[in-house]
Amino acid sequence: MEQDDKKLKFTTMARTQFLQHNIAERVFKLAAAFSEHGATDMNIATYQSLDKQIMEIVKCSMKKAARKDFGYMRSPDLTKAGQMLMLYKCIRSKETRPRTQ
Image 1 (cartoon, rainbow, N blue to C red):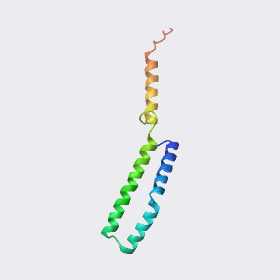
Image 2: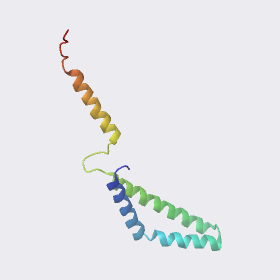
Image 3: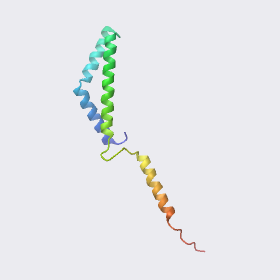
Image 4: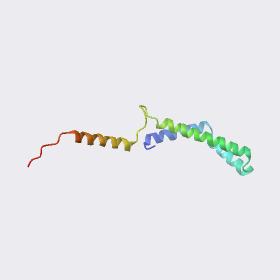
């Protein structure tokens, strides 16, 4: 994401979801369990579940933040290139001036 407003929207949405799902507390609890008991099957399953949930929150927040109100996202570079192409075509389509000798 290149636009600052969308970056801010993404971070606020992701933080809100992390707080609602108690992600930070669950990560610290899992880290303590790993340091105390090691890599048990239960800890690994909990880690995979937590990782999946974090990735879903990030993807969902990114998708919602990047969405435009009127269609699809456009690259600023692609938009600029399209404008320059239209300008070039407009200039080329005009009749040439008669040359003075």
